[in-house]
Image (cartoon, rainbow, N blue to C red; front, side, top):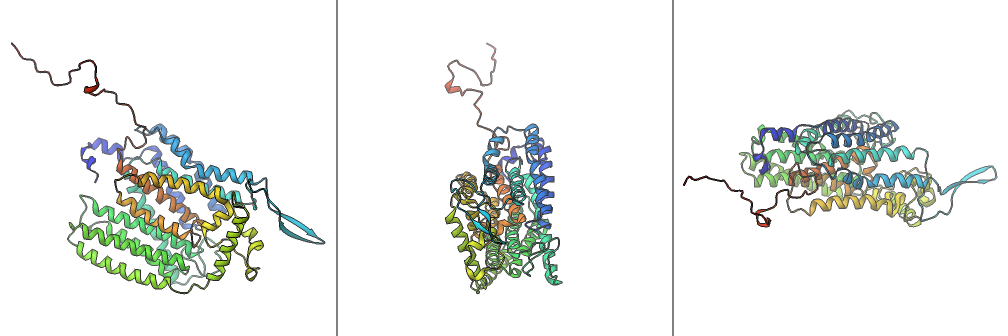
Length: 487
């Protein structure tokens, strides 16, 4: 527990930890959104994206409710919102301006019609595909805004202690369904037509997306387990909630052995081994639990075994490496031809026949095999740099503080693993992974801010001292206890 909590009265704790109207709205919005994203995991479901757009439209209403009903000063609310939501407004603006310039035009040759790429103005945005792209753009922007409210609205860590367990439970249930799916040898994921291939897991048409999803929530489960063990009034490990969290983390982490996607599987397995090492270190250092040595030994052995298994998985031959390399090379060439603003969202699939290797002509590919390369090809340097700058500002504010927040560090392991995965796969294409990434990132950063500051000062501008110190007063002012003596 935080040291200053002992100085709070029961009434102050109740005010701090009870949900305000805005927190209840945010909790309901988050639960409904994650339910749709986790269980209807088709990346391009118009029903899902439309639902996300509706949820994103409620974000401003929640913030206004927060401004009207918050019990403390929140002077920086709108300043933070407009700053950290800048990637959303820029992406929408780039899309609207890009509608004025399309690089693909039909070319009639006799009775046949062909598509050709015309020269473009490199200093203006481009939009190659505009038919349904707006749904995808607004849907993902809405997910970002819903996640951003987790950095602005919660006024105490109690919000996350009540909400995150339910999100972990939902993620583990999705994983359990995936195991049952494997056991019964189902031929396609539910609620989606899938990709036509057998590399799916649970409700995810592509198991590489599941690996990123499992990585994020296994780190959250592990962080919550270690958090509960650090409470002063925490019972022994056997009687606490920690075994349940670690079981959930194990189910999610061990699913990496069932994932066919090569590098996502390796990253998930390796990250889970790191989490087990953190459990080992935690119980080696904290010896108040009578089972601490047994727990540390067990988790240490499991970590070593899983790490070795992940190493052997990493050195296995990847049969798709040649085609993936050709797809990435095509994205690099697209970026070279339009480096500033790119070719517009969803342009990769449309322009790929003009850039792909001859050996892959006739095959259909939607992604470049790397989110980083795809974003550079579709959004250019400017569109990619803005979200990177915003995230860098958030991380800079976190790391510049000298106070270490272990729970935040543990939760961000999953986010770091997904960022690494974006160089070798396409995890952020999935709405479930995209939402999970930003939900956990903003929750972790808000947790750190709440841990380092008083709850009534975290969103307030530094206010002037209303009482001048005694040494700076020009007129004498007696502040000591006056004791009258009779002479």
